[in-house]
Image 1 (cartoon, rainbow, N blue to C red):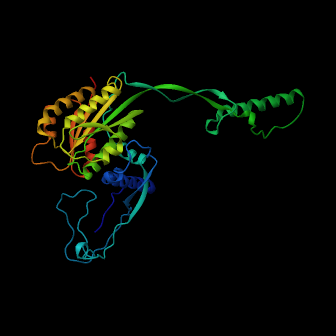
Image 2 (cartoon, rainbow, N blue to C red):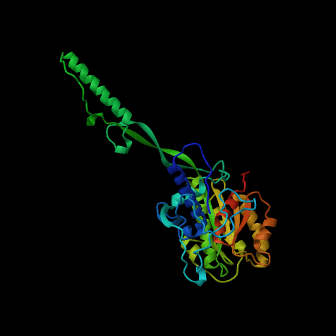
Image 3 (cartoon, rainbow, N blue to C red):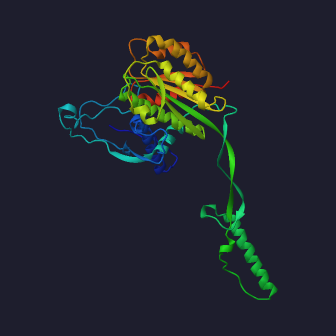
Length: 389
């Protein structure tokens, strides 16, 4: 079996190509194992510099692999694409699986370390999502902006003004030469080192800067039907969502609303790890969210993104109330999304009813059954164009 690389007459650096292929392998591995990587991360914790090890297949150079002189040849049917492998070598793979240990050569696997921030960069660098709308009055003043305001003789090395320092040295050298001429001293000035008095540092003035701010309302069904595996997927979804919104806004706050038949605001740990029994009134979670927003987050000032995760089971008598509350959330939110976790039931879930009866531009729904669907689902739920009225 042979794999041929297309001939390129232009000479190029092989190291650049290897780095590109390595980057693609890292990105592909991250997307395939996204839920495993992020499920234990704190949503609002300072974990961007924490290093995570991920397994990646090694890079292999193209080479000829000789056959076993068996009869027949590897041929295609005309539908093959560039890079496809024609034929296979089955020798050496017998005995693998349940029948025992195999004797074939395996793939090279090694581990690489990446930070949470690296993972976010890999995921979002080529993601073409619409800009989340920033409301006209949704601005707060921050003191994170620094402005250069002149020079000073004392400071820290990172603020050294190199150009200004050089000018001070030249001025001192010229003054020294003039003094020699006035005194009619014939002296050759070759080496003229810097002195402490030449050093100049940027003077930094703190300024206020207007920034847009955002609220993420995480709403989750914590009734008995929401198993730990479903919460595992929910946690990964909310983590990615929070990271993306942080890129768009300087100031991001997160609230956690859990609900069974009643809704309540909880901390992050209880949100993901505390299980409750009993039935489900989805409307209770929506109304509690509306209550918290009304008390602390003025919709005229805050960009609000509300997301609800549930397995879709709801008490039938509550369906109409849930629809009314969902429409109310849409009225004050930039985006309201409903994500259904788990295998779809044979009967209609609340997702079907919300899809039919919440006809708003800023409402979107999605479903996640397996962890591999996490990333495509997040892309789908955020790719919906939303424009503030």
